[in-house]
Length: 198
Image 1 (tube, rainbow, N blue to C red):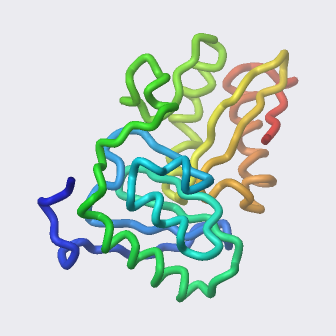
Image 2: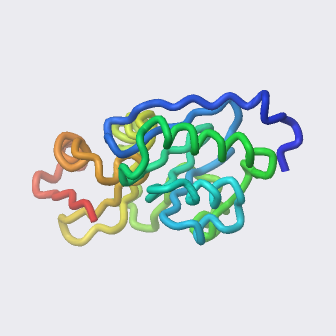
């Protein structure tokens, strides 16, 4: 699938995230050309050998793929060095089989066929909130190996789901959540808006 690059030419480096149980692996080649994808079990990544095989590394709980970055959330079973070594080995040995143009079932459900960085909504209020987050919060989350998904809006309650390094991150549940809520309350001119992680 990726004959253009030899494993010896693939450069992968690990970076820390604000979440102590999430590490970011950045490469000089793309893992996903368009959109993003999050997998919590190997079966979800079954069609893509490199992503599926990352779940063979002991303690991996989630994989988040965005552009040239894979963020791995783990349970602390392995030492940081062991985890880094094992994840890098899987990426380097399986990259030739990887197709960075892959599209998940969730992305296929989007009217644009997976060609967006985030979900689009029929609800214009949710769509406006997405645009605000694209401009303010989302770039920082993505730089840290995570992201945010707007799940639903019920009255003044906005339900969100953190992805990648943001899931289970202590700062996501405190400072980041407060920032998201403050920005959305201000820009939506709704002081009653509550942001609830699920």
